[in-house]
Image (cartoon, rainbow, N blue to C red; front, side):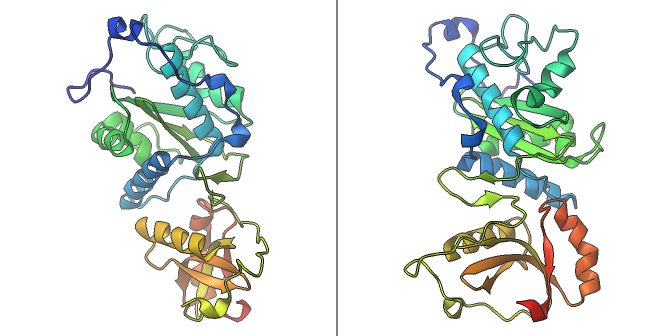
Length: 303
């Protein structure tokens, strides 16, 4: 699952590690409620989503709970190095509010991995982890480029081999020398996950329509939007034109070329695709709801 010896990467030795003063934040100190996605983590999520789209597979919902578990684990690896003395990087130290384990030696090593989300969050389903170690600050593109070339990890991305069961959630962390992806078998009860420094949420069914002040409000007449003549699948609503345009750009980067915004009062609905008939829209709605559970159909006469 994790390949330790690869000619492209330099792994720190025990002797070198012993001379380093670890300054990593205590992984037990971070809280789920404050957790957010870094730009590098979003970049890795988008790379995986684009890869899946090439395989005609939908993106997997970006999970706050699993991303939190991933970040905590990478912080534990950085601060306490439970992956030494015969243990591999799927191991956990005895320095936090979780069950410690040596993945390589423990009889119940699978539970060492799959039960960690249940120990740390309200996520109750099993989840499976892949890890990348760079020997230097990890970069999303480097981790993804390596994983997609290895059949074992590539199968996780494409639901092939032993991983044919569709994933219901995906967690991502990039921290220190590591990158980690967790693939979950169940839905995440945490429905709101945001980019750090932003209140724009991923996979949000229908975002709260916050009323803007007169100074902040953007009137519909100022928006260069075409009238809705087809049936649109709406994935969310934003109260900022800038955020709405950014979300449309993100969807188009993922291959949804028909994505656009549709004004609604002082808010902006996000349309991911449109169809000439309600029957066609309904037929495709279920696929989009695997990514955006609250997706719905906007009819031309109900703008």
